[in-house]
Amino acid sequence: MTTIPLEVGNLDGLIYFFAVIMFGPALLFAIIGLLIRKKNPKAAKVFYILAGVYLLVSLGVCGGLMSGY
Image 1 (cartoon, rainbow, N blue to C red):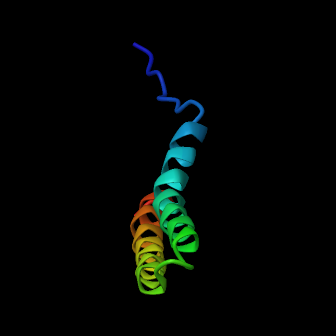
Image 2: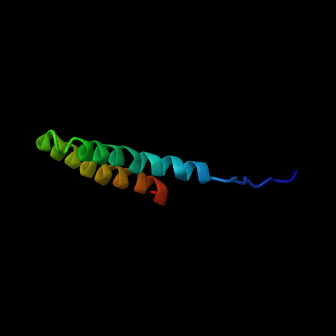
């Protein structure tokens, strides 16, 4: 009986998926902040903070998953 080694195919889609999860919402919050900056500067500042916090947390969680921990 021969053993068949398990091969992993192309994982580019998984990398793109994690990249979109990491940067997508943060980029969206930053764009919303830029769009409402003139009308409501306080709300724009909140969106900038949300973008920064989301980016920090997502890079920690998704970066940990991608590095193999």
